[in-house]
Length: 465
Image: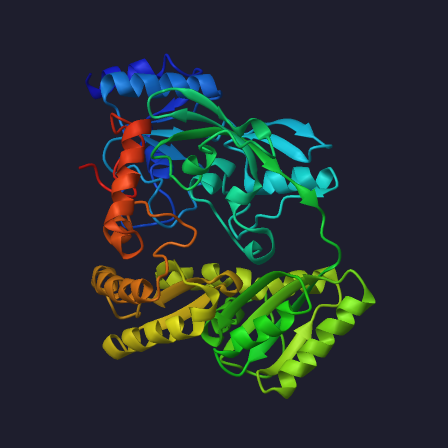
């Protein structure tokens, strides 16, 4: 079929007006937050039901049409980029909350439900959906699950996959599977839902998810501590974990905070400057917990690990302290940052980060490095800012060399080249740094079972053989 025939056929599979071909729509839906690849989809299709998604996949199989899923498009690995004439399947119109069970504390959602929408629904019903990140206002549940998104509260609540009771998916062969039936206990062979979580749409498309909810946290309190040295991040973490159940443990460098302060709207937490800062969040459920936290803070100061600190006295102040961490990305965005999302086991973080600093500074001393991340679970965000007098093409070319150095260090520390944004196109050439040849062969075998014609998000994670 030629492109015109494909577009005409797509229009028979979904509701009127839900096949988009305007150049502005192709540009908007054909990309995510990465900028390395120019979007070039053939069309954008907005299905409304699982059955319409199934019809699209069946048509794509019959006519060898490649499909790319599109959620909130907030990823950083080009997992939702359509750069080669694919048809984008966007889930914006599959945005309904379908069912809620107060006794089971579960909610069944379509894949296009926005993270913040799910969080708000839980809150309205006296419950809590704990997976949270800066893009919660635009990221969609299907995309979160397809990359197994983590965010700021993993240290307490885990990753997205930990909150999935059941999934409905359309496989690459066009079959509809209802996985796990929302059961807490279901030991009947392989748990297929976990193959689709983190698969980046390469095995099939998630169309519905039943998500678990939990109780609302009580009196969330935030501390920001100035650290004397990078290794003190671990000293403080271990000290607090012995007594206090942390809901978050974040860190950022002094350079990162300087950009946030220069960006405006946020004030420094205290006058004392420190090379690194830790942000701790916990539930102050009683005066005893607050007393314990203050005693631990004093212990950290006495040990020379912490040079200054502040603790929130209200919800407003807690939110303001969080802005020091959450506004970093937007404050450095004008500087065209190179971004990398990597992880190691928590205990190796200081050594790991220091090695990366050393190798980048040695070869590119004019590069400004900005560090922040979810240090409580070993997830670091490396950002390098483009020098103002350097052309963008030259900068990104040099950053390709940085990738090799960084991933060599990742491999030596038995870490991951992608902690929470997936592999996509950006990192597929480096998959072997985290996965063994045998593992990659099994991944390819799984792909072949669910998507034998290779139509589901092709060119992501790895290329077809």
